[in-house]
Amino acid sequence: MAAILSVQNLSKQYDGGFQALKNVNLEIDEGEILALLGPNGAGKTTLISIICGLVNASSGTAKVGGFDVVGDFRQARSLIGLVPQEIALEPFQTVIDALRFTRGLFGKRNDPALLQSILEKLSLWDKKDAKTMELSGGMKRRVLIAKALCHEPRVLFLDEPTAGVDVELRKEMWDVVRQLKQDGVTIILTTHYIEEAEAIADRVGVIRGGELLLVEEKERLMQRMGQRQLRVELMQPLDAIPEALSRYDLEYAADSQTLIYSYEANGERTGIASLFADLSKAGIVLRDIETKQSSLEDIFVGLVEDKA
Ligand SMILES: Nc1ncnc2c1ncn2[C@@H]1O[C@H](COP(=O)(O)OP(=O)(O)OP(=O)(O)O)[C@@H](O)[C@H]1O
Image (cartoon, rainbow, N blue to C red; front, top):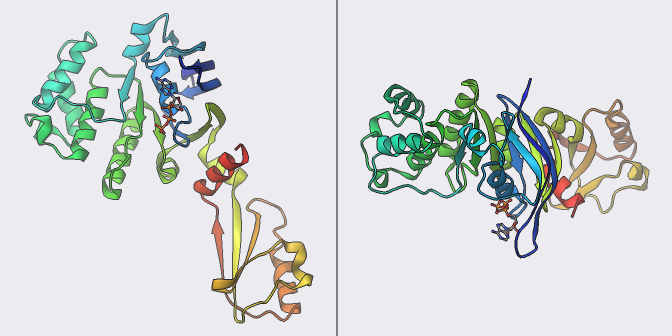
């Protein structure tokens, strides 16, 4: 599949001297959903802002659909929809006027049928004549998405689309994003919510201190870095982990009388069988067992801490 977005050796030093991006390289295929994860101040918004032409890079290039975001700004920008972090709408403007106006800004002719289909997709058609100030927070966010789509972009940036949004609304937003992907839109979203990346992303990029630490398919990342945990609840509390079990590097959670054994999820030998045999030899009686796959959150926290 062809790359719709290509970022090469991109760096940004702000005027005060702060280095917000360090030599970022990134290729995004048409039709995929990439989630950019990173702590506050990691450089996510800076990266998006450079691609959208709102901030100048100090060095490096970014191309959208083959157009350079500086040299061919108009062509590149016309392929991009941007949903900003902050809700910024004209309070007295109606929803449909907001869309018509935005489409006009991109030099596109009014297209009532297209605007209707966008509003229908976002469940906003019945609100088309409402003033934006009359809408709920969730509806306002959907208007921002509608506005970003009304010049028919091929790449959509969503900067923290669900920040401060309740769980139900967040899931509704995920459905919208999935639907957009089905329509062929490439989506890059930034998020602090790891479960958001887990739920909807095809690939995950982790950014920290201006560096893109990795970009990888979500499934592969979880498989490659994922660990499983075996949690063994004991009948009797332990004073200490017996010497005979020292090779397993077990943790002991005294409050729940649980021994915790971590192993490679995709390793050939997990060591579980010999652990059970050695537990039995040591006279330790089990009450219950449970296994748990590490989540994207565990992986992310591990990655960000490793590089700290
Ligand atoms: N105009 C600016 N001038 C100087 N420094 C800036 C400017 N804009 C951003 N920064 C700094 O660059 C760093 C990266 O900011 P950026 O907004 O890109 O991070 P982010 O990953 O989007 O963070 P958040 O998750 O909090 O939105 C931060 O330390 C920020 O203070």
